[in-house]
Image: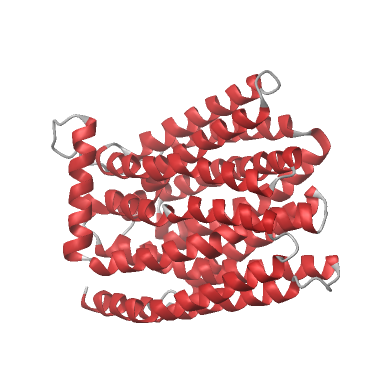
Length: 417
């Protein structure tokens, strides 16, 4: 334990613990709110529409989050947003049953995703501020594991709480989590050097956005090419899993909320395993060869589709869906962590937050479109679920083939850097 403190430092460990608590509260909310909506309406199309619209504030506010991450004390951002999230959930708790459910859930999800859009650039930009370059990959893997761990425990506990005490118990636990996280984050010390600038916020955002885009276009155009690859995966693979897993388990297979929670937990285990493997093999992993993980994602998705053929037994289909989903998460986590670390290490410190936010925004633009499409597909083609998943797997394999040359170029840049 002493070696770990020396290796990463008190402030990083405090941030990690705060993230565990905060992300757990977030995870049980992200499990319960969409499930409630799906159970109440029974419409995968409406589920996809609400999920898609909920992401829009996150896309827009990620740019603001990047600017704030480089110009405002990152600790203050995290503390303020955790307190504000607790207030949002408390407001939802009070208004539930007073105003119509669907609009209330939609607005709440939009607020939560918008907060996340500002919050995450601050967290990611804190890592290179707290640690030396040689520790960043391992630290990023740890932060990724925390998110995955919260996503593992959250749905399982959320499923139990939701099944026994309903949505109100989820809200009460999440409020306590965000308040506790905010208090803990007050004790973090993150190095901060105020950047010069007397412009108004709108002018500052435009200036910083231009600076980030100039950096991406002129100095690191390969980052934009990688963005196209990841955006393509978000449009198809990520959207299919986000919409498909709840719809298939709840509607197609008619299984319980607890089993949905277990599957969501297994997907998170995949993220944890991917983070652990990345940290374990950090010296052997090369960004130029990361296309292998995208090929694995496509292959596992095809197996998932074959497992959903109509003649299959529901429990066997559930096992295939869950296990292949977990395998996809392992491979995608190992890919995404490597890409994030390349950006963190090859971007000047005063631009890290803005560039990460800019990249996140470009990548996320495709996800609402994908979720909207898959919400409609799973409703219109409810008898052809296997074909929808197989088609997604094939498209993912084509994207992986396209990415090989781009990732080789990224690897060459890493070697030069």
